[in-house]
Amino acid sequence: MTDPETLAWWEDGERLFGTALGRMTDEEFDGPSLLPGWDRRHVVAHVTRNADGLVNLLTWARTGVETPMYPSPEAREAGIAETAALDPPRLRVELIAATARLADAVRGLPDAAWSVELRTMQGRSVPASVVPWMRCLEVYVHAVDLDAGVGFGDVPEEVQAAVVDEVFRAWERRDEVPDVVVFAGDREWGSGAVAVSGPLPAVTAWLTGRSRGDGLAADGDVPAVPRWV
Image 1 (tube, one colour):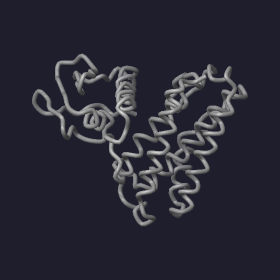
Image 2 (cartoon, one colour; image 1 turned 180 degrees about the vertical axis):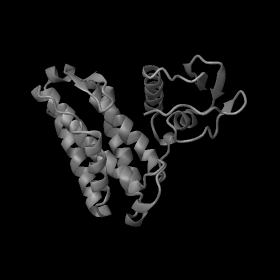
Image 3 (cartoon, helix red, strand yellow; image 1 turned 135 degrees about the horizontal axis):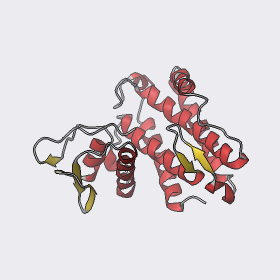
């Protein structure tokens, strides 16, 4: 079985994304998000299609039949574009339906299936038990990306710290860990030469590429960091 704490984080994350979405009028769907090149409707479309992609992974775990998240990167992009073209009321309905399908897939997965090895879009092999955490990353970070009154300060500190852990793990896998040591309260990441410190929400925003280091202190300028994903 997957970690009960992660399941609770995931449920809270879906609610937080719903809060951000609920603050947007239909007219605001066409406004910019915090992701370069994507308006808000594309963020909502991505989160919608991601739920179905994760259902595919859990289907793989349940049946043993290889079922990738998406048939191809091109199919993923086409699905997001098609969903983003829906009118806002329909897009809201699609998100709710996809989220419900994911919840049903999680609840219905047999205990033994949580240990089945799957493959992510990036080609990593992971157990099915990681899927709820993969969804946490999507809903919490993209709730902030909607730029609708939800910030990293609204994300539980434990979740923010886990997001930062994930960022550093991604850099380690690509051998791209920057030469920094990062402090947020009593939390610390990295072992580099450049010290950067500040409130945890500011650290999370910077390391996930959602800010250039606003609210942080450093030995000189706050450095640029590699992309996260």
